[in-house]
Image (tube, rainbow, N blue to C red; front, top):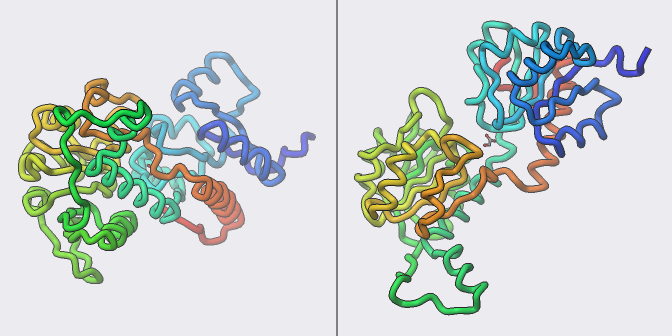
Length: 329
Ligand SMILES: O=CC(=O)O
């Protein structure tokens, strides 16, 4: 009998380095099955059509995934014994949580582990946009001064009114950092947060009207999809900057492009896009935009933390202990 025969069977649907780490460190505790980078559906298709008995999906009890691939209602029945999902992300919009609840599948995620790194990137993108660091970089590398004609000055970060959309842990971390830069913070959130003194605005249009910058830190759901639309961008105005470290679909991306191209808003710092990894080509030509490839949590510290959380949550689940970072119990 192979040594892993009695270990819980865990399907890994994560990037290669993540899977290798788990194999290397924890394969004495769990029997990992590698799903490489195929989307779940293609993987199931391959297994069923190739009669690949090596991948016995019926006995898989846990899945480790991340935001890159959706775990949909029609994918879940393909894993009939699935009881636990760990997602290596703070966001859970890629998982059909109500179907998980219905099927009795427990879910855990990154909790607040990634919040500081994501907030750092939000602030970095904002500074880059207002001080034109990436534009300057391109001149710096060519050792030339930017021509006066097609280069306007940057603008001071201190003193800006920053409207945070979604004052959860990431939003709060952004607020604390930007306060230290001398910005004024205001926010929109599902509920008023009684523990902060920042002014609350009950609509995003109202928030945008009163802000120089919008930073999007909220989760994506039916209420927040396209929460930043044309009306919000017009309310923000010509000098306004949008930073998005939440999810691409929080913004109407086509309208954003139009507004950026026509100068209806001043600039944007984007870590997330509507249809990742695709980034609309039109963005590439705009120097009032800074683009980052969904890298908010890309630090070695966050990665090490996520590996550890994956292990601890799996262990807790399989020993009937409370989860460390539950999403649904
Ligand atoms: O986008 C990244 C995350 O949800 O953690």
